[in-house]
Length: 478
Image 1 (tube, one colour):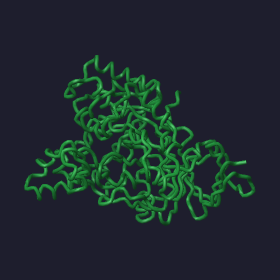
Image 2 (cartoon, rainbow, N blue to C red):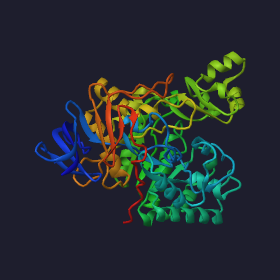
Image 3 (cartoon, helix red, strand yellow):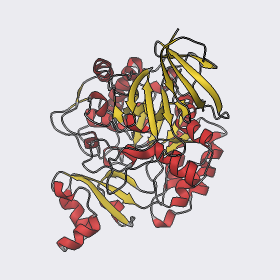
Image 4 (cartoon, rainbow, N blue to C red):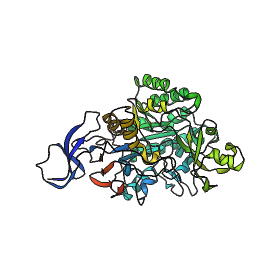
C-alpha cells in the first residue's frame, strides 16, 4: 500500500526524456513506483489530471543560509515556486564558520544581521537539522567568510599561516558534510586574494570530492581573464567548477556571451565545468559605485542609512536631491541594489545553453528584493518556454532538476525515479508564470498547484502547508 498516489498527471522526470502519462506512488518519503497504479491501494490519492508532475526544482544559487533557520509566516519564496532543494553559501558568503557580535563587512551583510553565531561549519549544519528547514539544503563554505574569520587586513593576499587556518576550516567543513567551497573574488573582502590563495584554501576539496562554485573576479570588460582564472583554479584543484550566475555586464559587453560560452565549452573538453544563471536581464547585489555608470537604471533594494530609499530608482532619487548618483550611493551605505546592465539576447543565449542550470541568486533579507527571489522558476516555465519557445518544457525541467542534481552531487534527488526522494511539484503548463515584478517583487507565482518535500505536502497553490519537511543534504563521502 502506498502512502500517496499522484494520479492522472503527465510526468516529466527531470532526465530530459519525453513526457509520459503515469501515476506516481510514494511511500515513506520516497518514490516507490511510477506507472499505471489505478488498482493500487493508497492512504491518499491526488488527482493530477491536466497537470505536469515533475521533480521539485533545485535552486543551485541561493543566499538562503539564514532563511533556512527561520520559519517565515505566510507564503514561502521558494516553496511557492516549486523549489524543494537549495544550494546555499554562494559568492564566497556563508553563515559559517564565523562568530561576530556585529554585522560583518559587505557583502556578508546580505545574509542579514545577528546571525553569525556558528564557530564551526558543522554547528551550522546541526542547527539546520534541529530547525528542520522548509526545503532541503546543500551547503557551500564561503572563501570570503573564511577570510573575514582569519584576517584582520583583507586588502592583501593571505599569509601562509592564515591560509593554513582557512584550509583547516575547509577540511573540517567537508568532514561535517559541506559540498564544496564558493568564492566571491569580485567583492572587496576577497578582491586581494590571489588564485594561489584560493587553491591553497580549497585544497581539502580534492580528496573529499567537493566542488568549487565561483563568482568570478569580473563580469564586465575583463570577463575573459576572470573566466580563465576560475577555470585554472578548478583544474589545479582537480574538482568540478561551477561558474556562478554567468552574465555580461555593461553596454560595451552586450553580445559577448557567444565568446564566453565558446571559452567555457573549450574548457569543458578537459575539465568538469558548468554554470548557473537567472532568467532576468538585471542583477542584484550590494550597492557599488563602480556599477552605477554601467547601468541603465539602478533600484535601491535596502539602505541602512536611509530605509525610505528601498524600492526607489537611485537616478530619480539623485535628481530629487540635486546630487550625483555616485555621491548619493555613498550616502546610502550600507545598501543593496538592482542593476539594469545586461542584454536580453545574452540572457537568452546563456539560459538556453546545454550546460546552463537555473539559480535564483535571490536575496531573502532585502527590503525590496529582486523579483528573482520569488519568480525565477515559474518565469523559465512560462516566459521562456511557453511564450518565447526558447526550449522545450522537458529541457527546462532538466535544467532545474536532473542536471542540477548531477552537477552538485545530490544523490537520490532531481529525478522522478523509483528509490529517489519524493520531492515533487505539480504545475499547470498553460498557466504557470511569475507574478513578482520590480514594482511588486514578492507576489506569489501562478500555476504551481502543489509542492511535496520528502513526500510531505509543503505548499498548495502558494499557501504554505509544512515549513519543516526539508532535510540537510550532507556530502556523501566517496
